[in-house]
Structures are given as C-alpha cells and as structure tokens.
Length: 325
Image (tube, rainbow, N blue to C red):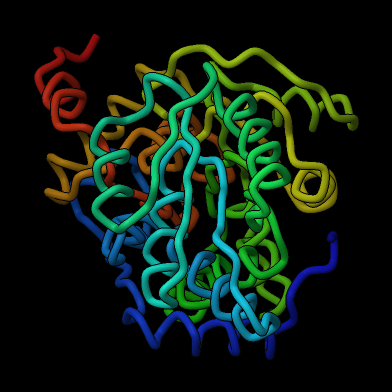
C-alpha cells in the first residue's frame, strides 16, 4: 500500500480523469498575494464536476475496478462528503449502485448532492470512524464492495491534479496540503516524486482533529478525539497507516489551523478571488497565512490547493458576516 504511482501510472490515470473533466486552472491573485506577502499560485480544484479534488480518485478507482470485474456488485463507502460525491459521480458513469454512510450532523448540502448523483445515503454514528465501521459491516452483511478512503487507485487519481499543478507552475517552492484520510497528501508526494520536483510539502490538519499531527510528531499511530470543526473534510480520528507512513518520510512539517484561521481564509478567498472555499478547502491558505513570516513562505513561491467549495450556504453566510478579531 505504500508504493507510490509512477509517472506513467499517473499519466494513465490522467487520461481517465480527463475523459470526464478538463484540467483545473491555477491562478495568481493579487489581493491574496498581498495578504500573504509572497508569490502564491492557487490550484482551483473547486472547479471539478463535484466541486472538489476527490472526484479524480473516484473516476480512476471505478474505471480500474470495473476493468477487473466481470460483474460489478454495488458499492459502499463512508465519507464526510467529497469522497462520497466522487464515488457517486463515477458510479453513475458506470451504472453501478452506491451506498454512502455519513455521520449524523453531516453537511446538509453534501448529503443532498450525493443523493442527487444517485447514491443511497445512510446516516450513522457521530464521526467518520463510526460511519466507516458501519459501512464495513454493511458490506460484509449485504455483499457490497467496500471502497476505502485510501487506496493506490485513489492516490493515482488525486495525483493527477498535482501533476497538472507542478507542470503548470514548476517554480513552486513550498506547497500546503490538507490532510483528512491522507489521499491528498499521498497524491502530492506521488506527483512530486514522479517529476523529481523539489517543492517542500507541508501538511495541514485542523486543531479539532489533530491525529495526524500527534502521530507525525510521535512517529507512531495515535488516535485523537474529533471536535466540531468548520473543516469537516479533515475530521479524522484515526490516521490511515499507509498515508501516515508517507508523512513520516515526506512531510517537511505538519501544522494545525484553528477554525478562526480557516474562517479567515475562507473570507480572504471570497474577497480576493470571489471563489467559495469550504473549510478544508481553505485550510492550505489558512496554514500559509499562519506561517507568512516563516522562511519557507516569506519570499518563496507558494502552492495552495483550493481543494473544495462544498460548504453549506448558512455556514458560508455566517463566515462571511463574521467580524474578524
């Protein structure tokens, strides 16, 4: 599971992804660079068919899984939203039924989007880990194929976005990568290694979900309670072993951002670019702002993936109306 896809494998995955969507753009935004005090490229993964980077992984996973199976059973997986939308989008293209398990209190609009894509939605548990355990049990009981949150085919799909980013902006020196279950971080590492790029990679977690940060510091797997967070896409209680191992080897650093910092980054994205960012989608910018005086940011060319835009309207309205402290 720790083997990273090679450049030919990522390029083959890109051919699958680009059969469903074009490459996403990357732009420099003057007001955002003014706030950061340095050169910054934003990779707009909010401009995919599901509004988030995860669709790349779902497209590649389903394409390759379908190619290995004479008969496709129904699929089941657990998610906080974007992984589920990715699978539902890809499953619809293959005519496969998919069941998605989400925790209670999950994003209303992400739930609605998954249903609109044809997924059967089940709400179970108080966090992602509880939903995942229920999905595993359901897969065994009913005979469904359990799609994990981390898999080499998902990583290869996600890596296609980073391949686009590194090739379009080869002067990147420091990139920030939000960490949920780790496919995004693994994809960034895979593309960087495949291209022989030298950008340092800094992982980003929520202060309300510090499992990856604590594990990275201790060099062993540690679980940590997950608190309510605006960055629900990073609400991980138990790290994925394969992606955690990659952080040990390839993370220049891992930093934690507060909900207040994430909200400030969401407001800046809207004011400076008029793009909507969900909490996890703004986490990379939040971390860069936190480290704006750090020599890894100051005077460097920084890469910021805007990983998703799927935030509930009332949450976004509250963030935009909030008075910065």
